[in-house]
Image 1 (cartoon, rainbow, N blue to C red):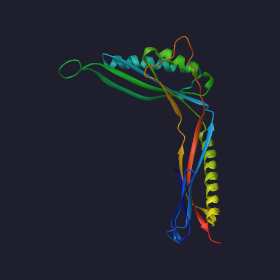
Image 2: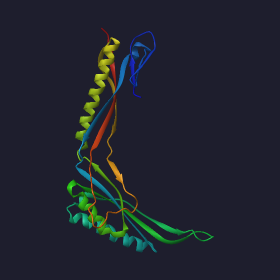
Image 3: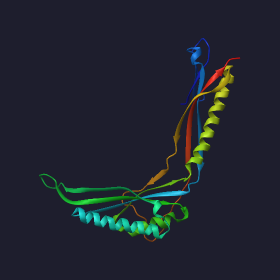
Image 4: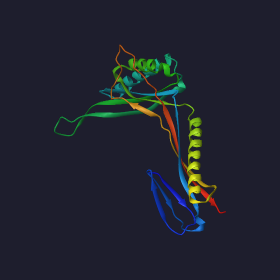
Length: 241
């Protein structure tokens, strides 16, 4: 439920609810006279970049063996991406981890039986028509060590979407404020305070651990759409006639 707070110089406290929105009219004092509303703006756009997160995970009997095997698989993944036009600036190591593997089958203290080395890589693809090709080639190059973690689609220039969403949110807030002021029999003044909340994360598609596309078929990829949502809370002063 959205709550709109309207403060005007009246003598009583009044609550009005209609169509799922609650409006409160209250007047503590002349100094607090004002009107506060929330406006929302959303802009939907087609993505122009894909973010593929690929994990490489290898288990060996020693740390050195696990590290070397994981490095070889990761380098193969990166090489496959580069050979298909992905520049170095769009390749990033997200995380590295090494941890022991324990055997809990005995009655006593668990014993270390090996080590797992994990390397998380992110590949940014700017040509969405080649996402499937680059994804399949990178996974094939890394072999059984590859873990496809997720793929997310985003817009490179999010600032432009943010500006449009912010403008829409302010227009929405102003329309609400003007209507409430008219209904209350007062005139809207200038904004006193403005606060903003932005929601604009890319939406990743998660894959099951160890999932990989079939060798004889290209992985189908559908970018869909992405959105930016801005919510503003604006407090206006009120003008006396």
